[in-house]
Image 1 (cartoon, rainbow, N blue to C red):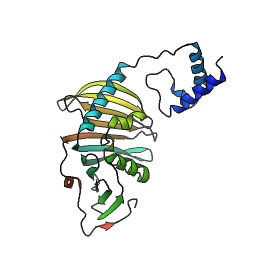
Image 2: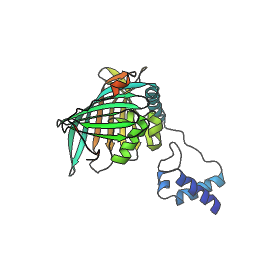
Image 3: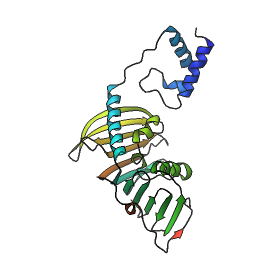
Length: 274
């Protein structure tokens, strides 16, 4: 039988691992919710000898390589811009209704971003950040809101999401390092195969996260960027989806004036959560 110190050590290690499974290891996911039994087994294994670690699935290794290559390429760019056509589900009492929005997004690292979103109901949303202030404009309502926040685009994305539940359009690909930001929340990845989209060869990969599943289609060559991004949310039970098609990527950073809009004199300032 394992000793109590060994059990306590194993339990501490189990809970210290947080909410993410150890990818490629023998430990089961159940260790996160019922740690005692796996901990005892782990302690016994420590007494019996070194644990045998199963080799990683080649599909997972290839998926990680594709994602890392995309992440490294985007991180190396001083700036980029894209247009993205997005379909998203709205859950209305269990029924999913498809909606559409067209985004234009421009990023200049480390602290400038501009976006304009046009929805299928005619609504328009425009926003920009200059490193010290975020401005959000609703042209049809003739209103705007301003938040003072200093930092990078990464800081802005996380602050708006946590404080106001506002998501910068396609913020997942705007982070300074895609994989560093998301890897702690990825439970498993898979390489699904090579595809052709509009004549271009792409790699299709999937990623399982705690709250959602991803499928991403990424170009090969010297500019590995996402051309399609599907998010399937695990809650609610209807599993709504968010599908993005990137229509036009442009690389490089322009003058600061390219990442700001203008507020007409007759617009009224309101609180951002109104």
